[in-house]
Length: 410
Image (cartoon, rainbow, N blue to C red):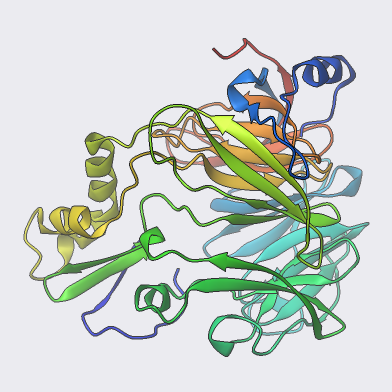
């Protein structure tokens, strides 16, 4: 949602796997696209990947468990999962029998969090990262609080501010960064990169990644005496994704012209050194004027009630202020499965009809999941994928599904 502020600029607060099934493994291996590694040539084409369909096996939610907007989910041991929904933000531990228990709550107490910037399991322990309070909390599978402590890195993030935990790495150290983006800082040139560091024993051990924050990824629309600011229409800044013992960097710059194009993946270790690179081909999709108009209508809907904003004025300001690339970025989002696979959501006009590329730990494309309309992928383990489906009344249900071979995409 766009933020509205007064005309005066200046710094402001932060704004807002599928298991390799035996019968499927042979098919995936035979159809895996050839992807370059460690600088070799021979990019793989995502259109060559076999199509995978989702078969839903389990649903959680509905009348027996009211869910708000689920925005994080982690797969744990013994059939447990953990999810974060809100507002107000809450963490639920859900057992294999479907029963749930809250883990912690909002606040500043020993077992409380201000925000949830990371979530996962270390054996039988659930960890919750809270970058806003620079703390990590630990819970038993019963939901009981085990303890917590500060995980901070003073002056390690943009503007000299404190970096808090956003994810736990396999060696027990923490990936830390700012809790959020100061959009005004980016728009005024005060911030040009988001810095990610590795923290162990309260000390910054490595600078893992510096994520460029291009001005075009954000928007500032002057409308009358108001400024409407927020995320731009199509983000092109690279993504950093935790995966196994290291991380993936996903480059997602839009193509400059029609015809075959490619994007790059870089696997880095905990210190930030590149250990593997891969190239994946794709066919760019043009950004049409109709899509631009629809995006601006949605983005400026909240401005309709602002004093002194004539009808249509905000939409016109949006088209003037927003930076639309000629083609959609190849990748819109990314997440890592607990089995080492990387999942990449393709950039396309209809976000409700998401398609995800399945990439193995070496950067080879294994398949392409054609997700049901409205499905949001949130986690994947070695046997299943997990996500959220919304019904016609916008009621969310957590679903678990397995993959099966589908009709080959042309």
